[in-house]
Every structure is written in structure tokens, then in C-alpha cells.
Amino acid sequence: MIITRATEYAIRAILYMSRQPVGEIIYKKDICKAQDITPAFLTKIFQPLIKEGIIGSQRGVGGGFYLAKDPAEITLLDIINSQEGPVYLNQCLVAAGACEREFFCPIHGAWAEIRKEFMTTLSRYDFASLAVKQNIFDSKTSAPSTK
Image 1 (tube, one colour):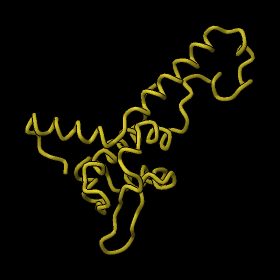
Image 2: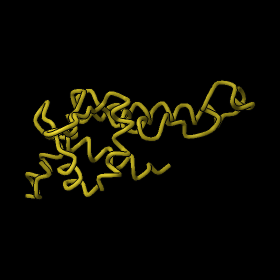
Image 3: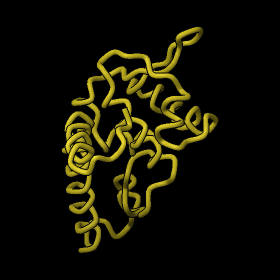
Image 4: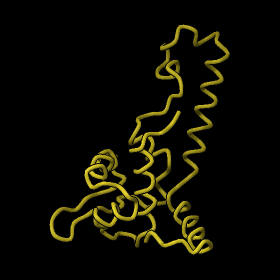
């Protein structure tokens, strides 16, 4: 499984936004410049994030985007689910009864366990923690700040 470019850019954009002061409206052009994303693509990837209540938008002069949730409440799983939909790993996990071998196939059980652990791991990574790690990395490498 490889996440889509939209998901990768959504993760990068949310990380960038998580590093800004709480409640600050962030201009689209600033996100695009910092993350090397075209404005049209940013608009496309932000639509599901707005629908999920992860970010909000403000129109007009001084408009832009803002985090609608605290970065500590936004996880990698949230972003992946908003962009890709639920992660199943295999067709047999989409719904109970979707696979006729579900009750006697050892692979079905393995897929279910792997999916559960994968989702649990993604849920442990919140954007407040990721932002702190990025700030530490930037200060140690003297990389140009993306703030």
C-alpha cells in the first residue's frame, strides 16, 4: 500500500498548520509556498479535511484556512481516512461476510490483526507531537524554518 500524493500533501499541510500559532488564519499562498503545493491541488486536498471538521476556511479579505481542532486531537489516521477512506488492507475486511472464507481462513485473521495494529499505530501520531519533532529537527539541522 502506498498512500496517494494527495494524502502525503495533506499530511504535510496539516503539519505546517500545526506549527503556526493556535487559531491563526493561514493564507493559502503561504501553505502552497512552504509545502510546494499548487493552489488548485491544495483546494482539492482540503475539501475532505473541511468536511471532516479537521480544518476550517474563512473567505474574503484576510481569509485562509485554520485548524478546526487542536493539533493534539488530529492524528495521521484522521488525515489518511479523510483522503483515502477507511484502510482495509484486503477486500476480505471491507465488511463482515464479504469473504466466504472469513471463518476458516488463517490469512483473514492475520489481515484483521495487522489492520488493527496499523490503525492503532497511526492513531498514536498526533500533529502536536509531530510539530514538536519537526521543530527539534529544524533547530538541530539549522534547516530553514517552514513557519
